[in-house]
Image (tube, rainbow, N blue to C red):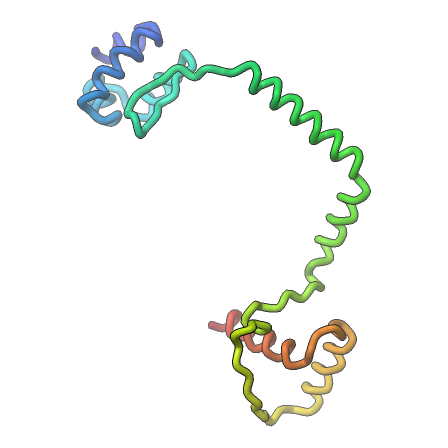
Length: 161
């Protein structure tokens, strides 16, 4: 098959010829033999609803299943119905997600069951320490100060590593 025959042959006939050529050659080699760039070759081969299956190195007819299409339509209707019924809840979830910048998520290393703890004393600026403690009590009263310090250290490592 040459370039002119490739473009002028009916897609159903052409696929049969190309599939025979693909039994002994790669897609790239077949395109080169015909004299068509690989991208143009692949695009032209999809006309007539054919798809290339790489693992088989063959083209196959794409068959649309009307049952699948109608099921897909029904699923779409179900999704729309669900969204309409739950719009207020969804808006609330989105609003909460937008405020996530204030949410503190501790790294699992901080609260790991396997963690070994040790006491360390460090010298630090009392003003900075008091500011940190006050901030933690106001924003995260439900978390232990040691966990917040550990998370702060991990954040520092991750940021400057």
